[in-house]
Amino acid sequence: MGRALFDLLNDEASMYALKSAYDWWEEFNKSPILQDWSFYVLAALYGVVTLVALVQLIRIQLRAQEYGWTTQKVFHFLNVLVNGVRCSIFVFHHDVQQLKPEIVQYVLLDVPSLAFFTTYALLVLFWAEIYYQARGVSTDGLRPTFFAINGIIYAIQIVLWLITWWKPISAIVILSKMFFAGVSLLAALGFLLYGGRLFLMLQRFPVESKGRLKKLQEVGYVTTICFVCFLVRCIMICFNAFDEAANLDLMEHPVLNFIYYSLVEILPSSLVLIILRKLPSKRAITPYHPIH
Image (cartoon, rainbow, N blue to C red):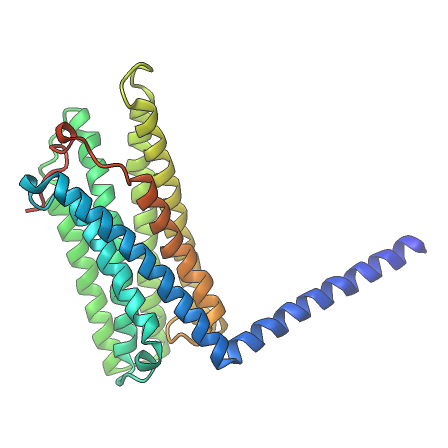
């Protein structure tokens, strides 16, 4: 009897906690002041990441001015671009929500996401080049493949935007979201494949190799962070596609937006920039091949 009463009280306490959390969620989503603050906090966080990436880009440029636009510089420049645009979108979110036709809002929110994919796909490309060069395999086809994949993805997304603008039926909107979920999954698998290969290759290096442990940790941490980031993004976009309550497009759910963008962009970008913060030595700059 006592056990049954305890279970009943425990169930009632759990239901009350869930109801309280739901009420808080609804109150937050319906409060214009709280909504504004959540978006301004997101803007501030993106602004900090932008500043960090910009400072790092300037430091690299001062260290390696003679090498032009290296992979490392382009990676940091794209981080500045992506996070800077996101910051501006959330600062001016009221204006963004008023833009017509509605497809313009989709484009403004999707373009930084595509650029985010390109930014971290560039890191996968860099690792793939290191891996194949270490194995004595030609890397001539890697960059054309990188540009081709990105070109195809951007072209398909533009077509989907145009179709959505022309005939905004729910099936096309869902297809567009599922396409981007597939892009995110592709990025996750890229990190798992080449990050994992590079990690295993570094493990086989002699223990006394200079910088082996540091590079092993760097590759391991970045691979794990980016794989989880893009996988979570894929899963959340799938929910977004089929559940109106999980809508992320028009900034109607500030709490969900805060969680989403913090997990899939701000947190991973911050961690990766911290991990890759060390400047390459003068002798180590040459492996960062110029972008042609």
